Image 1 (cartoon, rainbow, N blue to C red):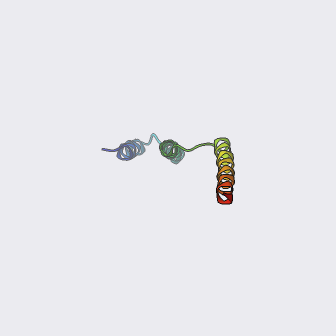
Image 2 (image 1 turned 45 degrees about the vertical axis):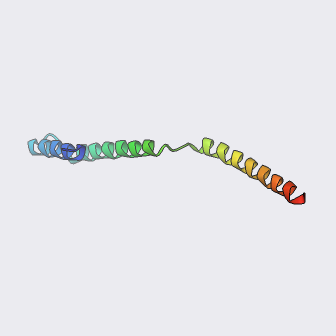
Length: 76
């Protein structure tokens, strides 16, 4: 039985006993969705905006160097 089936079984059991309200269910589902979103994002190994900008500047600098080297080579 996977996690979603376990969650649904637990929720249905609590609803049957009248322990949960619709707000509790919504809160539980929201928590589950947030957890899955964070889990998915961590698998993607994403970088933050600052790291991205630093890498972008490095690449731009390297591209300029490559262009300059090509120009020097073509002048020969």
